[in-house]
Image 1 (cartoon, rainbow over the protein chains, first blue to last red):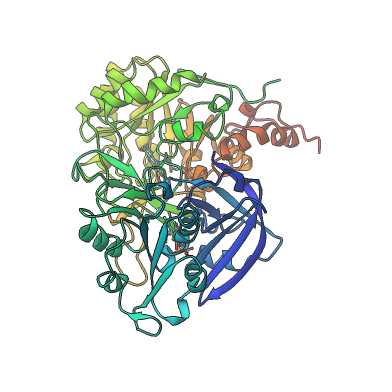
Image 2 (image 1 turned 30 degrees about the horizontal axis):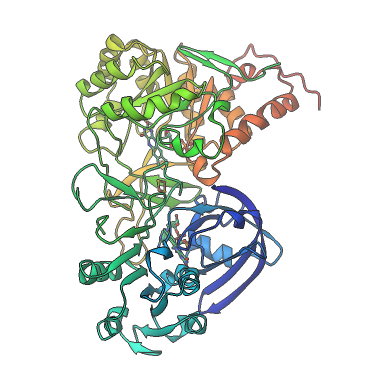
Length: 260
Length: 313
Ligand SMILES: Cc1cc2nc3c(=O)[nH]c(=O)nc-3n(C[C@H](O)[C@H](O)[C@H](O)COP(=O)(O)OP(=O)(O)OC[C@H]3O[C@@H](n4cnc5c(N)ncnc54)[C@H](O)[C@@H]3O)c2cc1C
Ligand SMILES: Cc1cc2nc3c(=O)[nH]c(=O)nc-3n(C[C@H](O)[C@H](O)[C@H](O)COP(=O)(O)O)c2cc1C
Ligand code: FES
């Protein structure tokens, strides 16, 4: 069930350049069950900024009633959020949307997890779930440069991990697709989150041969399916009236389900 | 004692708070968050004769204390709204105000004729003011002659009272209000969004795919208040006010300006529980201000006969 709660900041730290890891505690955690879901956060107290910010859940810790997000402080709202101090409260609405279903991969199989920039965080909880199910995981994570790389060791602890940077300052120079192209073709499922061009490239290359699941990003108003800000066309009716809402039908869709 | 009940043409309201059209869908999603029975009424999303997909995304952009939207009247069309959306709202004891839109007079007539027959639809809201539709939607709302004509045509077929939603994108709002009153409108709702634009810092291009969008939220509240103040003194039909309402205090200010009920739009995105919160806070605030009933607030700003509230503080 979707809940609204003032959640307490357990910890917040900058883990890479302008990248913050924020852990909150509260009863809302008991509603979180699926990797890839997100929360809608009110980053300031007044009317500025007015809209909530959608941020993915990157780790769920039911035992301690906490969950973690990793986000980039970029604009007004995320910058404000990064200034919030321990033991203060953050207004959280969630969990929202339909995330990844790790169970589509079977024990013993291999899954490829592909993340670009701030699309990497939701893959962490997903990877933990997959490995718990006995699925082998390969991670290919793309960043701008060495300074913005995060969670490399955490992912490495769960499985094979490749890092790419656009400027080549860490890992392979180039995009995630440059690594995937030369990987052995051992995986059956792909889970991806990141910029739309990356998702498009994965969809067109692997839609026919693999099970592909993509997490989309769109500007949002309500975050719960009521305002029609975040709709996309369905692939079988690309210019018609059929639609999906990224916030409540997604953000995760099977490749080929919606028009990217 | 109920301090909040209000009677308006077609509408028997337990309180004067209702979600604004387009900010609440057809109630389904918010119905999962709280009991919709507590609402005074629900203004549902605009309905057009045929389904509409709406505009390309991005459809929203944040602004200082506000937001721009260019949804483009996405809706499943009259048949589906009648078949799926309105019946689902039957489980609630809440009057529905059906927002209707179109690109020509016949569209409004078609939707009005059918939708006004639905049992829980207690009033219509003619959206003659949506700034996001290309095929002329805006001209209905900015030309008094056309606005009157569409009002008359809808009144001729509607089985329930008709409220006309005014656009703030005009130089003379009073003239518009008087024109639709002369056309037979039973009430007014105001204001719709103000046309605006924002550009992306990096690309220099509009953030919205539609380029322009409608500004809503606290940023437009003073404009709404001023327009309601002017119009309420110049017409004899009630006004449902809207534009930037976030708190119970805002509601009272709209009443002072001349509103008899209010709708809450954008605030539902900031706080999905804002309507129940306002409904709970209003009686407390009214008491603090010395009122026995919210209707005593209507038009206080200009009504010379209004008595000073009995201050008990
Ligand atoms: C489902 C989903 C999950 C996300 N998960 C993460 C995450 O885990 N970590 C992370 O760093 N970022 C994530 N994002 C992106 C994040 O929402 C934006 O970076 C953030 O909203 C920008 O806010 P701002 O205050 O920095 O920017 P501003 O420029 O102040 O934002 C202005 C408006 O534009 C919207 N906006 C701007 N960029 C985006 C964007 N890329 N996507 C959606 N809305 C945007 C804002 O929400 C706000 O309404 C996610 C987005 C979505 C849709
Ligand atoms: C996302 C969004 C969608 C809207 N859709 C409609 C609509 O379909 N029909 C309509 O008459 N008004 C629509 N409006 C206008 C609102 O009903 C309201 O008049 C306006 O937003 C001002 O109120 P607010 O500041 O409380 O949001 C929409 C507003 C928003 C923000
Ligand atoms: S953000 Fe409102 S419908 Fe998706």
